Length: 382
Ligand SMILES: *Cc1c(COP(=O)(O)O)cnc(C)c1O
Image (tube, rainbow, N blue to C red; front, side):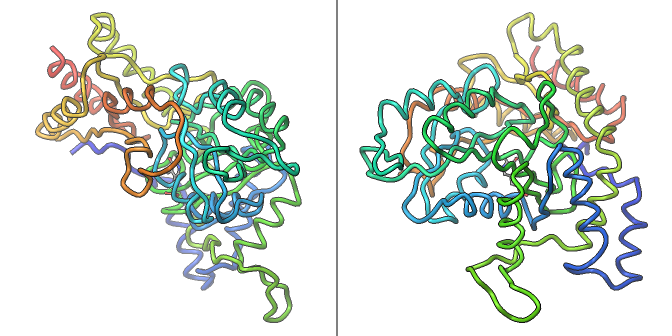
C-alpha cells in the first residue's frame, strides 16, 4: 500500500528517545522541550516558541490569551480542518464562517473587510456583529496547505478595528512570505506537529510570534498557570504542555526541516509536470500555491461539475490499486456541530472541497511509487 502521508523517522528520533528513557526524563521536564522550542523559534523568526500538546490546544491557548471569551465571535474560513472551529468553541465562542479566495484557498481578506463594514458596529471601543449582538474578538486565517495569504491586508483590517490577528498555521511549517519572518505575520501563529504534518512529534503543537508578553502568557496558561515555588495558581490554566518524549522526536525532525520541505515541494512539482497533459485536456487542475508555499499536501482538483461522489469513486479505484488517496477538508459550515454558526458567503469553499483529491506525498516516497500513482491517476482519468 502506498499511504497518503507517513512520518519519516530515519534521523535521530530513536537515539533521542533512548536518551529520554535512559535519563528518565519522559515527562514535562527535559532538555528536548527547550531545544525543540528554540529550533521552532529560529525556523519561524520568532522571539520564542511555546511547545504544546497539540495544534488544537495551542490554538485554544492563543485565542484565550488575546481575550476570546464566552459568547464572542471569531472570524475563520469555513474551508479548514475542524480543529480551527473546535478551538474557538473550546473558548465558549462561535466561529463566524467566511469564504476563501479562489487564488490561494485561504480566508479572503476582501470579504472579511466587506462583511465587517456591512454587519458590524463599534460600541465602547469593541466591535459587535449586529444580527447576533455578539462581540467580534479575533480574526484567524488559516495557512491552507502551507499557503500564506495577503497578511498585509489582514494586518490592516485587524489594526483598523482593533482586533487580534491569530493564525492557524498548523500545516504550514517551512512556508515563507517574501523577506518577512513567519512569526511576525500575526500576533500569534500556531503550528501542529501531528503525525501527518511535514514535521511531527507524534502529536504536538507550538505557539510562535514576536510579542514576548503574549508568548509568556501562553506559556503560563499552558503549564497550569502555576506561580512557583509552591502550589499557587493565579488563573484557570491548562495542562497543554508537550512532553520530553514528543520533543525528542520533534528535535530529530526539525534537524531535517529544510530537507522535508524541499521534498514536499518537489513532489508537488513532479505531479504537476507529469499530469500536465490531463490539465491541458481540462480534466483536472492543481492545488493553488502561493510563493514560498510549503506544499504540505499535493493533489488534483477534478473539473467543474464533478462532485464528492466522483471523488469517492476515484479514491475507491485507487485503493484497489493499493494507493491511498482521499478527499480533503469538508467545510465547517456543513459539519454537524457548526450548522448554526453565523456565516457569510461560502460558495467557493462549497464548490471546491467536493472536487479535491489529495495524492500520496510522504517525504520518503520513492520515484517508482510516484510513477505508480501517476500512471494510475492517468488511467482513471482517461
Ligand atoms: C492539523 C491541523 C490542525 C490540528 O492540529 P492537531 O495538532 O492535530 O491538533 C488544525 N488546523 C489545521 C489547518 C490543521 O491542518
